[in-house]
Image (cartoon, helix red, strand yellow):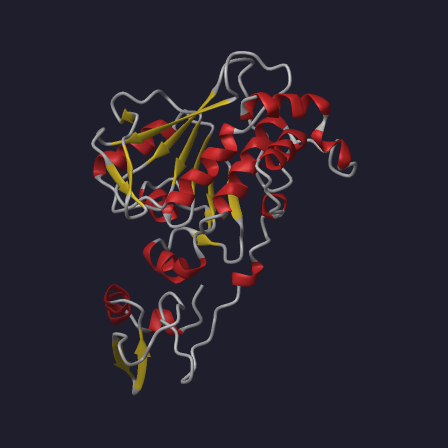
Length: 300
């Protein structure tokens, strides 16, 4: 029996029957996102935007969520149909050594209902233009991890709230002061855009998207099929452990930009007003040197 066939059977038998407190819960806007309207039949198209350097779990996690959705009685193929989109169909190196051949180019990609933007390399102007155009008619455009930087570059987050990987909070705030950074959020929903925190947070946002389309019972069945025990998709504020900034000390110095641990003996450093500050990489030192006070005034 194929995995999808097994899941259809499981759904028909009522996987959520063992969860009486949740089995009858419905979709809604409890987490700040209004319900999404699924077409009466056929598949919901999900475009995964990729380029060199794409982080694997950022797109593979949500991909598996959408791949494993089943809605009893629904006709017309898989509930979600995911495909990869890139500027060309040339092979992409993701996660260092994983080679991916994109299915579609910007010119040939079908119009998606959902756009997923994982962390990846520097975007081209063509990529930004495609996102802006495709987002006009999409139900939702979502970023995962530092894919929020790319999404913000399009202007679609301007004046809205968003989140990203906790190590990039300060960088994001500096790069996009027109976006309200939410520390400690597992994901943030703002109408037709949404952003997830780091890495595995994308799985939770994808489950939340399923809930917005088809209700909580379908999302619970999907999580059960994945054997996913995470509860973050049920509570967008569940990353609060990252809400408070870490403090750098002489014994345990941190990068003043991203708060990562550093080794003083080898770390780049800058002296400002008589105090030495350390960085995890040279680019963070450069960001700091442009305007040190912005990093020392309390941060995001």
